[in-house]
Every structure is written in structure tokens, then in C-alpha cells.
Length: 170
Image (cartoon, rainbow, N blue to C red; front, side, top):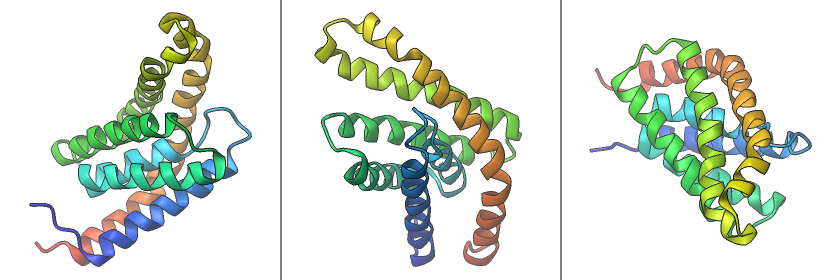
């Protein structure tokens, strides 16, 4: 059974705030934002459920500022899927090398773009045309994830280790 204490809920809220501010701050760069990296790192440390909650909060809160639409549902689904996968990675492979996690971040950028392309092509009429037109942006997203994971993981990991040392019973 998943245990949600006040401190863990506070961490999720803190990272949702960080992701929303990061998404808004980097809105001028197409598809380069820290949201996916933060969801991956939080999912890795806090588990799949926490990452899904973080994905939901981040998407809805940031889209209040950046624009809400039918794509919001699919953004939640894509980021929740990424969070679920990263939570499972953290659960079963806790000593993952940073570069492997960064490679997962690159995969996640492409996965996110694919999920949105599968769902949004209905408006364009052609899946391949929509997908290929968006592929450069998916590559930006993948590259941005690698950079953000390499930059943020060492810093955020210290916070999560502190959380585990203080609040998780042995």
C-alpha cells in the first residue's frame, strides 16, 4: 500500500510549483522545458503514484497560464505514463546511472510527442504528416530532457535522499 504523508504531499506540491514555473519560464523555447525531467526525477524517487499526481497538477496548473484545450488531457496522459515508467524504474533499479536516466529522458521526449501526435492527428487528417512535422520539436524536447536531468538530478537527489533518511522508517 502506498503511504502518503504530509511531507511527501508537500514535496509533490513543491515540485509541481517548480515544474509550472519552469514550464512558464522556458515557454519561449519550443518544447524545451524542465517538466518532463522533474516528473522523471520525482517519479524515480517518490514512486509511480506521486509522479502521476505531479503530472496531473503540473499540466493543469501550467495550462491555466499557457492555454487549456483538448490537448491538456493527452498531455496529462503522456506525462502520467512517463511518471509511471520512471516510478517503476526507481522501484526496481534504484542505482541507475545518471546517463541511463538521461537516455530515458530522451526516450520520454519522443514518447510524449508520439502520444500527442496519435491523439491530435485527427485535426490534421494525416498521422504521418502531423507526426513528421512535429518530430523536430520532439527532438528538442528529448534533448532538453537530457540537459535538465543532468543538471537537476544531482541537486534534487540530495533533497530526496534527505527525505528518505528523515521520513521513511527502516
